[in-house]
Image 1 (cartoon, one colour):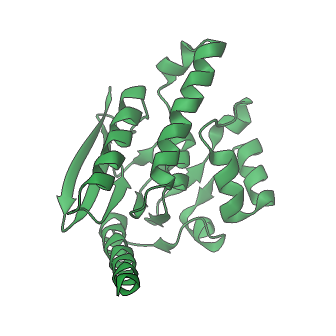
Image 2 (cartoon, rainbow, N blue to C red; image 1 turned 30 degrees about the vertical axis):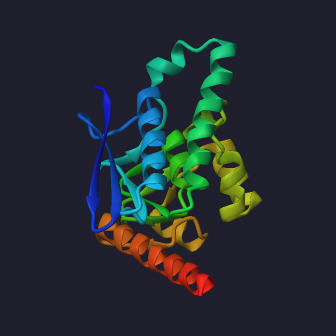
Length: 208
């Protein structure tokens, strides 16, 4: 059951949707490359002011593809970690706002992707975790750095080491998500437009 990435334009905002036949998108190497290509497209397309990344009703994304992880050697594991870090940096360093609209499970590498986004809007059923911690595996895609900056070192260590899950309410309370919405995608699209308008207004005032 391979994962897919679809792209659509919504009034100047690029909507990237992670999809999978079972409803649990995985960040395969191919999907990582497609995300990176779409972020580059966002940067180079004047008509696009920002982007929203979302998943299915069941999950934003549940991490890397297990079959790919199982075949990693020590050398290829380092390359895989660097590849994921490169994609997450591209998202985080985008000059245009990129917002995660999370529904259902947001786990592992999917959580790293959401953390790399400039903001996170969650539905009430969203769940965030790095489950690898309970298996003695730690993320290599930047979550160990971005999570503490957002929610503090203590909470981040708890999540990274134990694999503890945060529901949407707790995620909002600790600052991991900026808003809980009935329709996280619609809210994220509007938030991206708002941020883009503010950025554009400031740039115009600076030119004047």
